[in-house]
Length: 555
Image 1 (cartoon, rainbow, N blue to C red):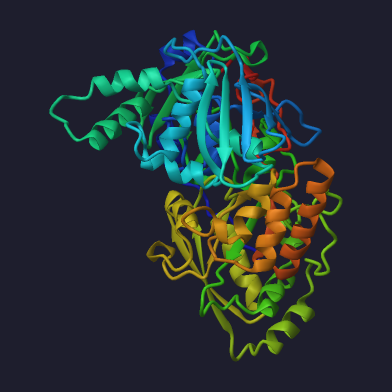
Image 2 (cartoon, helix red, strand yellow; image 1 turned 60 degrees about the vertical axis):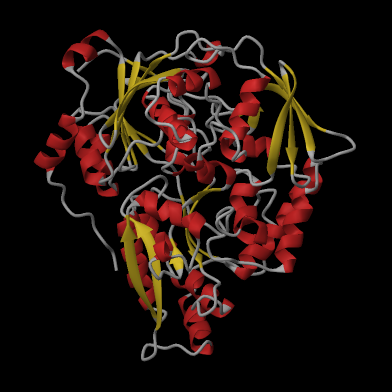
């Protein structure tokens, strides 16, 4: 049942990575950190990245700030939210749909213009107000789906802004970690440079955003200076960054798309990059033997199949969903992946405040799985055909081909006939918001998109409510019921921590019992780095902070 990684064409991988390297003359003068990403393209650089959370990690957090940040400074504690461009925030005591955010004074965008309440309103409008001159439809999907209750913003004074939600929503401060602040002044300047021959306002706005992506301006610790789509993106240090603790120590960061794991590994071993995401598991012993450092940490990040609940789906029968979760030996998969995963028992682990003690236990129990399938009418002579949409690479996808081929073989033991439909990562990720049944789902009745579980909305709410059905958010399979809508509403409208945790535990308990997912693995975020890279903190988060890192001189 074990799968293995196909040998890399090392010479070809070296040639590919070599074509993407910074010139020797530049490297001789600067401290340059070169990163091999799993993405096949550079995540968008205009302030709302695509390519899943790999985009936030590499072209979001380094160049931009949000009102609220994740604390990525600790390896031994869960990441929590901390002040970013907002110093403080509070919900209105009498109207729980209104929040007041007091902003950090003295912050400037990379173009030198000031950050203020008007800039916050502008950045909310760019994704919510279709009548705004700078509204950008291309940024909506990756933003609004992550904060579906935000309705509007207004400036109270230069350093105070009021945000309004459609319904009371205690998750709003967490959701706002995904709304990055781009410079209104810089965008307006670029709009003025659009040729006068372009007269349609929407076309002019789109052209300005295209120019902004090539010449971005945020408030973050790095600023973008060179974009070559599908090839490279370069950022340089913002030495005037407002947070002294995060002022960069490296001069330049180079992002290189290397979606094939063997190519990434070859580039690292040959010294052509300093850091790779998700190395080929078979190569980990060699990586360590060669003196490179492997960073891992248990993360709130789930590798699942998400099931369709549309009419005719084979996953409508809960016995089938339970059988799939009982059929796979996750310990064997962990061995295949060189130990680079944790074994899940749900979206969050036992002992977590949201655990809730489900009555259904996710484990390996082959006889029970077969019995459930037989009760549902399936057998070796009458297998159940299912089709799964997946990608060959991508943010958080770990080793998707190897893992899905392993699942394909493992589930045969329980009378499943699994067909794999492999598409480009960004297409799979986009279909996550389009939903099962959309033409871009390619007939699949399950999708393989990994997800962060570090906050209530990302971990649970967006998968189990009618409000988050596509295209609003990521309830890809249309898993809907009055019970789950009410459980989610109770959690969302509870503003004290203990009460909210209790409500979320009740929700998680029922999610595990109904099993809208096949929970396969929890990621550990494996990163292999040159020993020259210092100041690395691998947090218990899907994100990581480049700003405090340094790189020692050497070959």
